[in-house]
Amino acid sequence: MALASVTQEITAAAAAKAKAIMDEANAEIARINADADAKIAEMKDREDKKLKEAVERLNRQELSSAELESKKIVLAKKKEILADAFETTLAGLVNAPSDVKLVQYKAMVKAVADVIPNPKARMSVNDSFTAEDLGVGSVEKDSRIVAGLILQSEDGLVEVDMQYSTLLQTIWDSEIKAVSDILFR
Image (tube, rainbow, N blue to C red; front, top):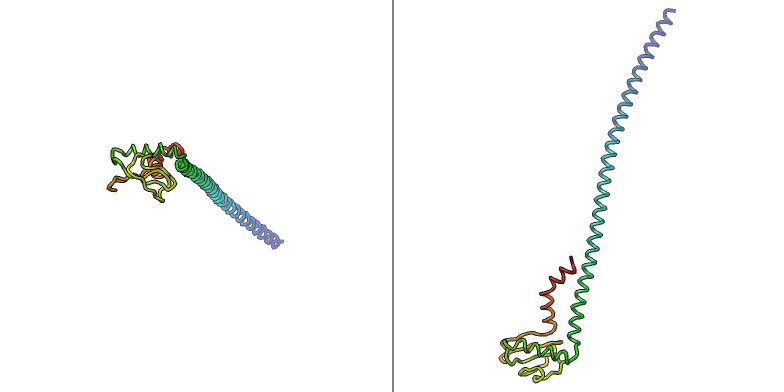
């Protein structure tokens, strides 16, 4: 019986040692799993934060891009309106009745009287005013002129361009800043 009891003792000691080793191994596995879970959770939180930041950044970029595109569309429309206003105004001047043009042409001649006394006038082939009508020395027709006058001194050294397109462009250039400030603020 002594052998049986020694065998039992050895078996019990081995079982206890095996259980202790298994318990230690299970504790080590649990610790490794806990560390791994903590690292995974930390990595997931970091990646979730990066993802959230990336989504927010993309949303801001998309919003910014949409706002910029919207501003471009509005700006293009405002420019189109300005161009239409210019063309409409020019067309109104060009197509004005001849009695209105005559008054304007006489005012042009008067405006340059200090610079060019008794000027020659070049005008559109569509206008039918005489030198006497305008109060100038002579009148020439010029197919390049749409409306308005080009006034020259007798010797041709001094010339003042008073075509409607030139006058309107000059006014436009000097006033576009004020108009832009109103439209584009």
